Image 1 (spheres, helix red, strand yellow):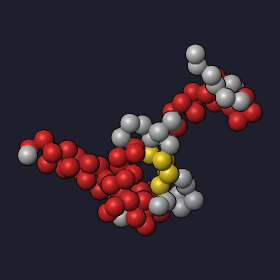
Image 2: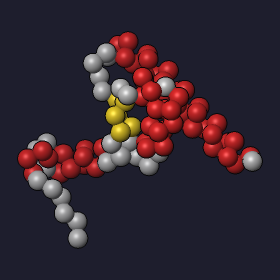
Image 3: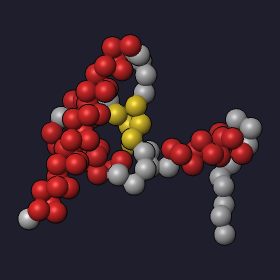
Image 4: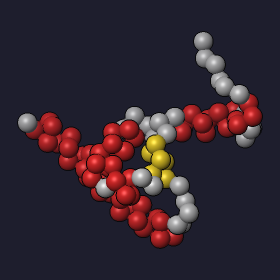
Length: 88
């Protein structure tokens, strides 16, 4: 069906673009870390592992990375010492 084919094209296209970007970036920053984040990070990581497990193994998944950055700003760069944030 068309919707499934379009979704597949977007996912595989995104992975191809990320893989190309990663290869170019790693040539300049070989020790750099790459983290997939957000709502689509888990899906991209899953598909990437299926089609290129060697490269995918070098990419980390953290769906909450944005929130760690916000927490770091909120606590003046000391989030690792601040303890958990409890939202009630």
